[in-house]
Length: 382
Ligand code: GLY
Image (cartoon, rainbow, N blue to C red; front, side, top):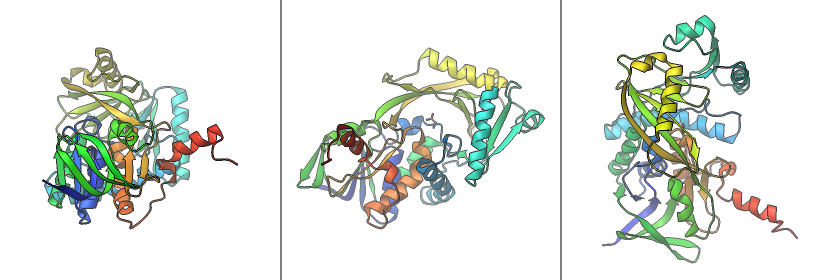
């Protein structure tokens, strides 16, 4: 059987599926090859925060991309629901980032200032106003920055909706397909070899999360994308305690879901490649969750899981074509922001692949690490 498509995408996480969805919507024949199940890894482990402002410590191209992506979510929610019947549960109640020490207060107020200068909404709340606005919060917290534009979605549902969106728009999602090799001719990748035979494509997109490095090495490119493990837990309080996402000072966040669960994320463990959740990881998340909202002591324990965030050397994603090849694109390394960045990545990459528009993504060029390596060695100079 000949297996062909206009575009072959290797990797069926949220990024691969978002690109495939954006391409399929434009009538492109696209096939996604996923080694396991769609969204089986980092994408479904995510709590689904859309933390464009809450996660960024300074302005720049990454903040711009995050804001642009966050803006696309209402439309994506609407279109996905219409086309697939799946509701990604977009909630736009905002995120409250909290401070426990005077130092943290200062840092968050500085963040409020630069975000205002940047034209963004962010409002500082403290004292009585804080207790009134978030009654379940422990009195230990000195204040919080309310970011009304940030929100959340149900991450596992998002990946399923995108995959279904690909199918209803004529694309194909192939699970259990392990890519062994890339077949090349001159400066083109013509096919990929897999455990299910050869898949031929006019264009190839590599979006393999933490596996991106090994895929790229098959095309002679070395790029480090390392796993940063994150552990999360889920609790179910007897009644809803808060509506918006609460983000504590140790990086622990509480994301309330429509079904009554509160997702508590996440540890950050670079270099830990063991799957699963340690007792210490779960204990720390519980302790920090209860420090935020003491009533969570009474919540029912539901679940614990882990995932691996794909991190590049500078923490920014890699997006764009590979200059050594005429028809190969890369999209990966989204680290803590894969869910948030899915719409902008999907739409921007689709437009680029189809030759409609080159996004202004210099900061995310896959070649940027090569340039640094060459200039550090003094290479390329007369
Ligand atoms: N985006 C939150 C995290 O990666 O933990």
